[in-house]
Length: 605
Ligand code: AMO
Image (tube, rainbow, N blue to C red; front, side):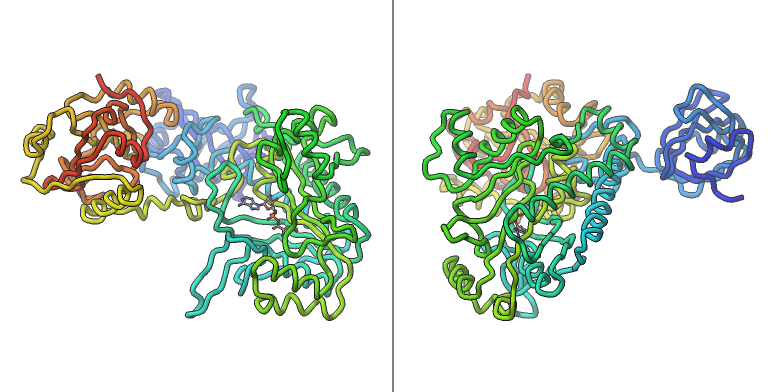
């Protein structure tokens, strides 16, 4: 029998259907079970009454892949208006492992770190799935708009010889013994392509060694590139930008109705445009900072860029005055080396701010060979490294300009997401590559951990002493051989989250007892409903190369989230076993507080 997609069952009441999908949930009620099946089109209730079938599903976990045959009947109790009574059920792939997070609940009850650590699985949650379906619509609409307007799509290189944006945020790589870089954007290439097609667009990867750990920075992303030849002024660019953004959101509302409703029902809200006949508000930089100064009383003298706070405030202003989430700021006092200055020395560049941050940069470009050489030199760069780019200006470049739209930034702000990482499938940032934590490459093995911890103190210029001694399996032993009082000791305990298997490390004063309830009250904020137990010594040995009694307080060094009771930092002298039972590091409480990356709280009786 041909497969029926879940959404089609609505039109097949009274007939037999053959379904394929994943177990979304199972409710076993003795002689009857309600199994919710998920496929690409939605969820369906399957009723199971047959004894053997009930037996075969009783220990099935969420995500198991099934084939079900059955008859469709109308049902007032289900959202779809139908349900299926199963006559045959085949388990194609059975899930037996416990899920690290519950993906079948309306909200994913896990913190962002856990969500990203398990990205391939958490993407299956309906909210994440909705976000990226919407992104797909945005991408398709961008492409369609550009093609309809006579732009040609181009695919620029991601590995390039020199910088494309200037600045220091460049990933360099060893390229067969020579140096190459990962493109910060397709800037130079889109300009080159204007010489070929006049109007071009691209959807390109960029890479930036941006050491900013914020809710809006990534190190890898996509930019919607756009470049237009024979422009008169900035407005030739802005009209397209405004129109394509409106079109992208309009198509999302039209094609992704269910996804948008789902997001709205979870408190997300779509970005607000001005009335269809009204242009986006636009302010020159000098006027924008005046508005900021007036609204906040802050002194903006000497500013050549907007601060994060100013961007937020200007967006607030746009909302109050124009009832829109967008505002252009033009003519910044500084520009990149390719940014055009008019005859009055004013940069013809702009940023588009949305909700509280910049989502697009753009402007007219320098099109004169000699001025460009000067500008490149002024940035401390060597024009020889730009020879191919520069060649186009000797062979006929029209007045031109364009923009780069940060795709993840736009998705985040257009949908009202909290964090840019939610708008990137497999985000890379200062701590992750393709969503995988660099913590998995954390130091392991007592020797390396020990050295890394000493290094932390050395780098911070803090004093410490190292004491070699007999093995000290307990904190009492440790205090005795150190010749210090028990109050000076720091006890590092490794716990395990029973549901996710994640380890956490808690530091408490050696003479005190851990109060798990108090710890959970903090831990539960980011891990709702979590239960914890002490990790087994053999697991600690295997995972981190550490023996209990030698575990140091620095969990982050070996990739474990770390907590510390505030009392451990109080004593003038503190001591802890540094990765071995036979070595102690002695320092002061305040020095420890400076170098220990830990969540502080009250975790003791
Ligand atoms: P710019 O460097 O301003 O301009 O980048 C354009 C847009 O890309 C996004 N973006 C980022 N998003 C997340 N994390 C980052 N680290 C990050 N860096 C940039 C932002 C930003 O507005 N070549 C020019 C564009 C042009 O003039 O055509 C450029 O790259 O949304």
